[in-house]
Image (tube, rainbow, N blue to C red; front, side, top):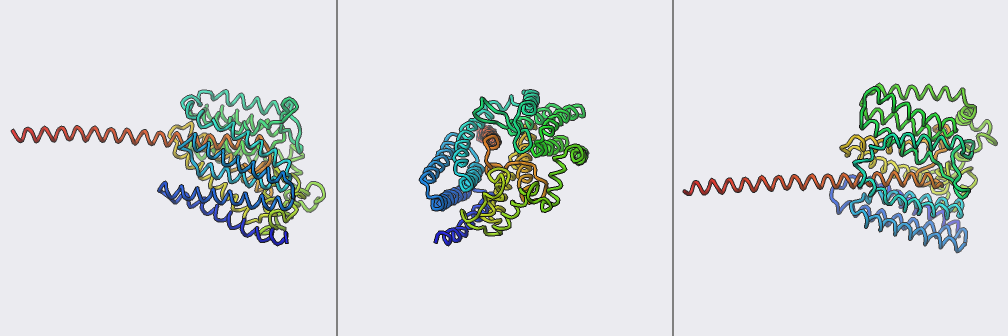
Length: 467
């Protein structure tokens, strides 16, 4: 009986996710505020219904009271966070906020399916990240005229942070990623430095975009990438590199820098292949994981098996065996999700993320000051390429690099940096609305003064004509 319920529920889950994804893009076609608010409300209903349905299935599977507590806690967190955020920031982009919560919900429910204890910890980390970054839009608003003045602090501070990992960091899956704090918890500085590097580059190009400035900025960015390569954190290094190349192109509008950057990246990849044995292993595994399926090819093989087993519709939530996939809660969570919920749901999640990316790019084009325009574009690039690299590695499109999926994968540092990025975009969006409203008021005041003067002139003319 339970098996039948699980299989039937997958159609309900699929329908809800498909409708949510469709509404996500219909939002951009609505010009009136009422229509947009209606779409946001419908998306919120779908998210909370999915959360209830998946929690019920999870409780029926584990038959543990802690699942009910987890459901109540996550429900309270989502409702309180969205309500407080909308109350504090009345001009906030509720569409962006709703999508962030939807992805976080899907991530938490997938974590709960794979490992309930990790899901509990992820919820705590989510609350911590959400509370910490609640002030980001406010700070951005108050300090928007001064952020670019700390350019070298961002560059040197970020470089020092990732260099400290190279010196004193701990290994995880063959790479130095984390720093231990007081022996209680660990932090991955490269996740936060993703943001500081973008701030540094935007600050440098705000001041000058001549050849000297390009050379200096490129040298500092290259130092960031080199430190990560030496730490064997190749996925993050790739994100840094690609984001910088595209930021350089947007800032200078010179295709030479784009082509030379991509060309140098290709040469660096070839050099890394011959210099580092672990790079050769990953490339060989990518080309033919089946030749060493019990060793180096085990991860990607199990990932493909899981996606293939789920096929388009999935095995049903709690109906598969996603825990067999190695590192399923982190790097391979997309494969675990596809096994039970289906490839179509996986594609829908990617489309929701692309909708967020589209919103990021739109906000970037709205910015007037060069610092914020370049900064927004760089953060959008990092967000987009992080999705591409994670999903591409899981489906064997590109070699594995050990990158998490934003909001969905387990990990506090990744969650914190993603919340920071969303807070920054919310802040820029609200600042732009305030500037536009101020500009409209000024235009209205000018028009009113002109009308008043014209009325006075007309009255004088009428008076003279009467005499």
